[in-house]
Amino acid sequence: MTPDAASANQSARAVALRLSAATLAIAIAALGATLTPSRAGAQEATVQRPNVSHQRVVTKPPSEVSWRFTTRNLRQIKLRLRSARCSSRAELILDGRSLERVAVPKGRKTIGVKAFRDPGTHKLQLSVRPGGACRRARVTVYPPQIKEWIPIGAAIWSRHLSADPAFGDLVANEFDFVVPENDMKWAYLQPRRGVFDFTLGDRVVDFARSRGIDVGMGHVLVWHVQNPGWLWQRDPANPDATNPWTREELIEVMREHITTVVRHYRGAVPEWDVVNEAITENGSYRKNIWYRVIGPDYIELAFRFAHQADPDARLYYNDYGTETANNPHSDAVYRLLSELRAKGVPVHGVGFQTHVFPHLTGVPTAEAVSANFRRYADLGLRLQITELDVAIPGSMPKTPAAYEFQAGIYRDVARACQRQPACERFTTWGATDRYSWLTKSAAGLPFDPQLQPKPAWTAILDVLRPRGRP
Ligand code: XIL
Image (cartoon, rainbow, N blue to C red; front, side, top):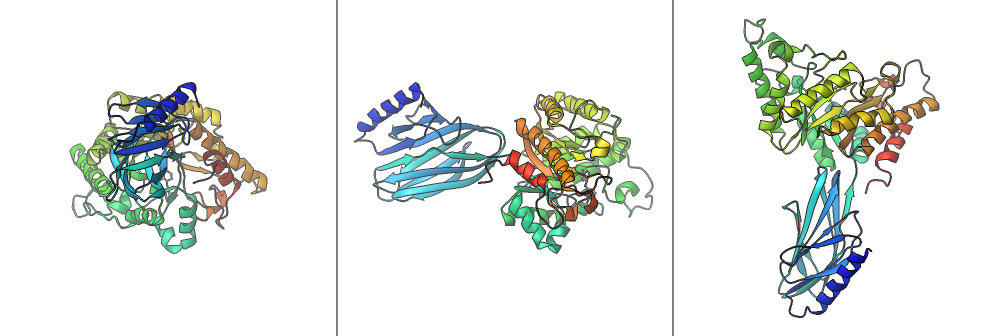
């Protein structure tokens, strides 16, 4: 306890002795926090590190206490209360929104609430009033325990969930969230012009909900692959099907798709991969249908449409080969994002796919990835590892040494994310080699085909969940 804290503690105790007329007393025991008196008699504790703070007493209405704390990924809040003499009622409020209302019987009570929040500073308030016929209550509030960690997610394909319950169990038990590997791609969501089918995408969301894990990034709104045939042929119902779209028509097609999809998933999908792979490996714009018909401003339009459809969604640009700097692809993506930010386009984050083929792409070291992450974070962007897998080259026998080599790469990428405060999520492109777009023989994922953890999984957990998952 610091000297300041000790004197705050003493004066708080002195106040407590003069309490007889108080209608409600809340005694707060919170070790190691800095206390800042606020106006209406309540006090605020800035929790530097969760679980530490001082003991103090607040008297008189408003019977409220609050804490401020900064987290990267808030996941859970636990608060212990002790209500002496009388029962009381408590309300937990986070960033001005009610999280939970509970009755606190005479005695002890623990409030545990799942609360996923973005990186940033949060204000937690607890308001207490006497319960039932009580006119006075005395409640001791112990310091909040704030749990946070970088969530680890896996891309899943709904068809594997229905066919293979053991796979669903693995994902639900081991991962914090899922992203749709294919089910929210354009070809599935709008197979015919103007006809939307959310069946498969909804399965991914329903799976996450029913198993108590989160949904991460919706994938993907605008890409050059896995689009329905009609996008190239125009509307098959239109006899003049070979005509190219006009710029205005294709903008409208894109707007309608983005708006319908993002609105459908509003509240269920918190962030979107809005534009995927718009830059090629030589650093030029990819000459996809969007670029050819609309021009390079299709990117900016896509972000604006998504933002209009759900102003709360975090919007990402996503690409491969961009996790380290000093190659034409990565540097062109950086320039694109700098320009979009400077223009005020609503792009909030950048996803690094991180498909590692050691023999082709080289091996990204933690230092090189960290240095690259820094320049994106300096643009004010959120960062995510979005599609990590590490192929074991065909020429390399699948020996324990090969799996250790692979684990080393996983470890380095996880470290770079862990070190960078703007890095928010860590996603592997699949969970198990049983279902990997790289094929079983590349053995690129953290669980083997028998659903057993490989050294890569141990490496991820060592870095991102060193104390386990509460
Ligand atoms: C892949 C899926 O994993 C495969 O199942 C599908 O056949 C093709 O697409 N970059 C991306 C992902 O952004 O959408 C791709 O996913 C992998 C490369």
